[in-house]
Every structure is written in structure tokens, then in C-alpha cells.
Image (cartoon, rainbow, N blue to C red):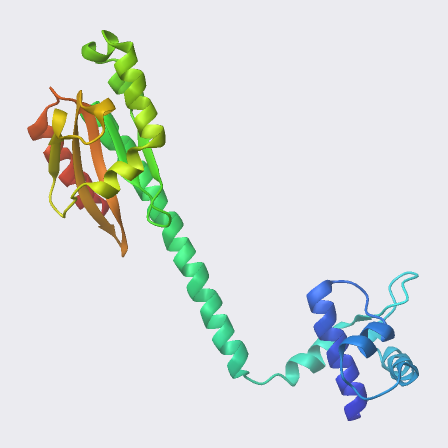
Length: 234
């Protein structure tokens, strides 16, 4: 095949792969620097069509590659360092997102289980954006002290929905469980509660997991449950 026809066919194949739309001579002329006139491109496309490399679908003015064109295109492929690097970066990005989604699934699962076993609110920050999610509000609402003080229960829920992420950024959280009991909490609305927090590290994704409940919570069990949950997460 002559070089000019080869360049035109290559342009048609590449553009069709990108757009999935029939390719006309005008588009090839405008987007590819082939140093030939539109009439020349049309003539070469007519020859390519006769040779079975491109076809005209229906009444479209454009042409699409045939399997013969793809075979010629593939047989002439060489490893392209730029494309290799791009493919590697794309794979790394998708792999990171895949791991992130898996991390979120594991965290949702573990927080749900932790809320069930402690019968308190369990929470965790998400590793990609530090947003907070929590489970077990109904556990708090069933506690006698909050049933006797609905306004206090409402304040706890409001803090979880609005201020809790800010609170976590202001307190010391380590690799070991830490308690903030009653008045030790810096947000007045949750000073009827105790807070238990610990850092987690799941396959390189880091954040905070913890438990929030009434000050009469079972401290020993909750500490063991939180530490076990983070150990199992890993």
C-alpha cells in the first residue's frame, strides 16, 4: 500500500475508534496534517473502498473501516512508549479506585457490625475525603437517658450530621483506643455521651473509627470491640 493511502486509512481507523461515527474526507482534511487536498483524500478513499478497506454505511457521506483495515492496522502496530506510560497510569488510577471502593465496603461492613455488637453509634471516616458515616442512631434513641431527654437525643443526632467531622479533627486520635468522657467532649451538645476513637489503616487507607454512646456505656467491652474491629479490618 502506498504511504499516502496508508496514512489516510490509519486516520480513518483511529478516528472511527474514537467516535464510532462514519468518517468523511472533510474531517480527515481538517484534523490530520496529511499535506494533501480534500479532493486527493476523496480519491484515495474511493480506492480504499474498492480495495475493501472501508465501506459506506447506509446513506452516510462518511466511511467506516472493515476488518481488513483493522488487520492491516494491527499488523503494523509497534509498542509506543507514550501509550505504554499512559496505560500504566490508567491502570494505577483504576486500581487505586478499585481498592478505595473495597476499603469503603469493608468499612461500611465493619461499622455496621460494630454498632450491632456495642448497641451504640459506630462511625468511621472515609479514606478518600475524610467524610464521616455512622450507624446505630436507633441504638442511642432506645437508651433510657435519651428517651427521658428527647431534646438531648436530637442534639446528638444533629452533631453527628453537622459538626462531628470537625470534632474528630480537633481531638487526639492515636493507634490505641482513646476515651473522651462527658465534659471532656469539646462539643457541649454531646457532653451527655462518651466517645471512643482509634485510628485505622486498611491497605494504606487511613482514617478514624469509633463509638459514641451514653456515659454509662460498657467501656471495657466497647474498647475491646473497637480494637477487634480494626484488627479484623486488616
